Length: 252
Image (spheres, rainbow, N blue to C red):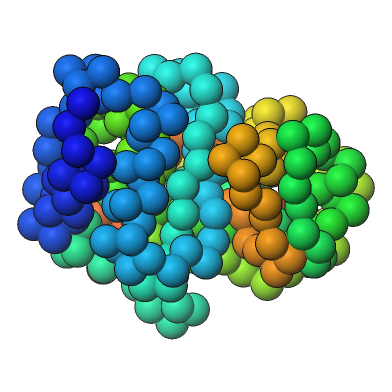
């Protein structure tokens, strides 16, 4: 297998040059566990300080769209956050796509290999509407699970709204996703592993496998409720969540 640092550098070069590269996991025999090591090195090159966790491929729609059958996680750095008055700058990206998500804000540490949704909800200070901006570093969004894991779950940019109390039956929380004022798709929280809190519990269990916990005060994007939508300069997207609020983003 190629050196971890070399593969991370290949992905970082794609970010810097805004030029997609070919997937490499299958050719190199890269396992998912190996890919998380590449991801760690890649995140270091992107700025190192991960402030938000993002879960990916937690919905059947996303798994079918990307032709994989297992969730994954990645990390978002301060430089990836889109301020409230900022547009998404597509000139810095390769092939941006956006998707609506429910984000969790924790007020207690979460850990352990048997973490369940009830523990996540008990440790949650609030939930927020979010827009996750993807930008795969692989040509045409063609990759294996190990590829996209190494690529930090295609993480590129994000925006989150203000925390709200967790609604009862979060799995039934409805979402309307609009692009340029037109309805793109509707969904409910149950699209994410039947309950977004279950997705966060899955993440905590995965962290435990690597000897890690989720600290208090963490923000976790629980995964897309819908398939991702490609955007370009001039587009405007808005996600409206029942009892959680709405969030919008203009694309420059």
